[in-house]
Image 1 (tube, helix red, strand yellow):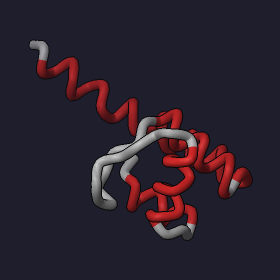
Image 2: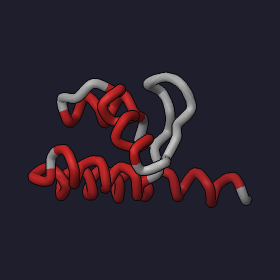
Image 3: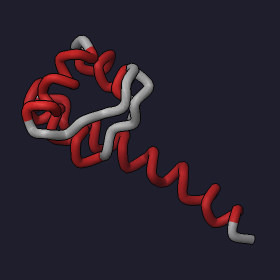
Length: 76
């Protein structure tokens, strides 16, 4: 998930998420298009909007399923 996308889902400014991650010594590349690790996304949602955690986890799982067929096609 991208930084800007998560910020919109949680109604936050991207800088709030960047500051939260920096406090945990997790640093991102510049810009709202920076890719977040799934573990970081879960930590961010737990901190800022725990009531939305289930929806985000479902989204992350569906995103993984979408990427899997592409990887298997590339190996053919």
